[in-house]
Length: 483
Image (cartoon, rainbow, N blue to C red):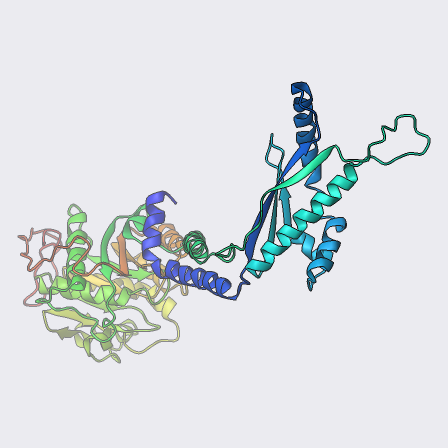
């Protein structure tokens, strides 16, 4: 996933980023609120040698002090320092706990020692720091004072330390605590929340194998994307679009009609199967509206409900379902006897009674004859079928068609499902005309901010075909030239 794709994913999944941001910032604020307030007081010591006034001696003393100060910092937290301080100040803590709150360091190439003490009370922090400094100076001078060894010939008669420590800066009660820092914690929470949100989005995008755009679908399947049908929450209540409707959904179906017509100008398909990988992808909705708009544009169209497991076409148009395709297939009626008409000149062949063996019926020679008979009576036959993956009904039926439309639901159908569906059609030699990206979330007013207010049909090109009995009002012209 490149940077542009990642930014689009962030914009699409902004609620995830917002939730992560709120959670981490809330945790940071909660941690700030429950954290113990800590103050820090510091004192500074200067280490000198008891050298003479000679320059050489002063330089030697300076070098000696710099070499010693690094070792002195390790003495600050020893029990020789902490035990007397605890007793002197009457602290309610152990020497080890006090040592954990003391820090000593010597800046490089200096003879200075900085002692820092942390405590929950500012004044007590300063008192402890000063007491530690006083005790530390005493301990160091005691350690540096040479011991008299009886009978030693090197004894000089002096029992003073060669180094002396002085306080250059006494500790004072700090005005503000060093911990917690609300602004710093808030900034860390914001940054951490954004990073967490970006990480969660990246993880979800990596694990999510669904297709988000029609461009991604076309690139994945190497099939033309004929239309993107926007999501409409009222589609279940009002599945059909009308000729005078100019909503984004209606314009998308008109675009599907136009793209399908002009993409197959040289070899216009007469029988088109509309299917999908799994159920719930909007194939019946697509088939019904495509057939309806073709009929309203003047193309003689027949819509066949060949989904014999869950037929929905009759209920969408408010027609009778009991007599239809299965009635014709078992020889109980002719096509003309069970064909129903709807407004706009569309002919609908409902599913009929649900049979116990839909796969065998749809793959039978009689089904092929029925489709040819419908193609002789109409310019275009749109066939709504069952999904490809759950059942085998469509694979046998699709071989009788001139082309197939594969409907893919946006952000719901997985890549492996689309791949398996396309491969199943390819194995039986079915020509896939293209894909339809359904139920996609698009900006209000259309992706490009342009709204179409009308559409003029292009002149229809006459395509001669074999003579057949055509009912009055239907034409024999091909439909590829209609816009």
